[in-house]
Length: 325
Length: 105
Length: 97
Image (cartoon, rainbow over all chains, first blue to last red; front, side, top):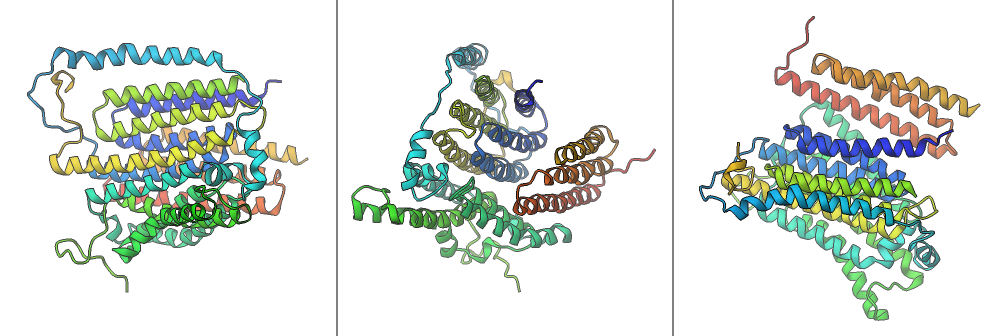
C-alpha cells in the first residue's frame, strides 16, 4: 500500500505554486488578494506537514488573517486600476535591457542552479534540536520553540518588538486612521457576531499565550488573535481606538518593548549578560514578557490595519472621535 | 528525505515566481503581494531544511526565525501599503512612475 | 469500530464538499453560489468534526472540535449574510430560469 502522506504533499505544493502563479499573473486585484489569503491558509497546512505547528498558527493568524485585512483595506484605498503619470524621459538602451535580461536569463538560471543544488541535501539526524532539548530544563519553559524564542535567542525577539513599533511609527507618520473605525456596523448580524466573538477571542488568546509555555502557541499567535478581536469589535460598531487617543494608546503599543527592555536592563545589572535570566526566575520573566508582548502586538496590528494615526482631539479639522453613550 | 526536498524546491519556485511578478507587475499592491510570496518561499526553504531530521517536529531554531520573519514581513506589508496609499493620495498613482514607455499599454 | 465510524463519516462528508465546490464553480448567480458554499461549511465540516470526535483522546479535544464547528458555523453564516447583503445593495441580479 502506498503511504498517502507524500501524495498529499505533492498535491499541496502543486496547488500552492499554481495559486501563487494565478494570483500574481491574474488581472483582477481583488481576486488576487482573496487568493493570497487562501494561499496563506494552505501555507499553514504546509507548516503542519513539516512539523512546525507554531509557525502554522502564526501563518494562519498573521500571514493569512492580518495581512489579508491589511491588503483589503489597502485595496479599498488604492483601487485596482493601474494609474500613473507618464514620464516623457526616454529610457536608455541599458535601462530598457536590464529588466529583460534579469527576467529572461538571470532569474531562470539562478532558480535552476538552486534547484539542482537540492540534490546535495543530506539527511541529518538532528540539527540544533538536540542542543535545545538538552537545555530545556534551565530555560524556564517546556516548549522548545518558546525556549529559543524568549530565552536562547531572546535578542531576536527583542529587536523584532522594536521593528513592530517602528512599523507603527512609520504608518502613523503617513496618514490618519481609516474611517472604518468611526462607522456604524454594516449589519446587525455583524454586530451580534462581534459581540459573540470578542469574549471568545480574548479567552482563546489568553489560552494560547499560556499554552506557549508547554505546547505550540505564544505571544505572536495570541496577539494576532487579540488584534482580530479588536478589529471585529471595531467592525461591530465599537470605535475602540478612538477611546484612547494619545498617551494610553501609545503606552499600550509600546509596553511590549518597554517591558522587554526593562528585563534586559535588570539582567544586565544582576549578572552582566543581557537577557541571561537567573534560572529560578526564567519562567516568570518569560511569562511577563509574553503577556505585555501579546497586548502590544494586538494593539500594533490593529492600529496597522486602521492604517494611520488616531484622530487627535485638539485638531479641529479632523473628525472628533465619537463617544459611545 | 524526499519530502523536505519537495518543500524546499517548492519554496525556491515560489521565491522566483514572486520575484518575477515583483519585477513585471505594475500595481503597487500586486508588488507587495509578490514580495510576500517571495517571503513565504524563503520561509518554506528554512522550515524544510529544519525538517530533515528523524523527529516528527521541525528544528526549533529555524521555526523561531520563521516566526520572527512572519511578523517582520507583516510589518513590511503594513508600511509598504501605508507608503503606497501616501503615493496614491499625493499623486493619484497606483504604480511607480514609468521610465520605459514600451511596457505601458 | 471507532476507525470504521470515522471512515464512514469522512466518506459521508465528501459529497457535501464535492457538491459545494461544484456549486461554487458552476452555479449561475452569486446567491446560488453562496448557498452552495454553506453546504460544504455546515454539513461537510460537521461530518468531519463528528468523524474526528471518535479519534479524540480527551474531553478537552472533544470540546475543542465542537467549538471549532460552532464558530465556523456562526462565522460562515455571518459572512454569507454580509456578502449577500452587499450584493443586493449593489443591485446584483437574481438568476431567473
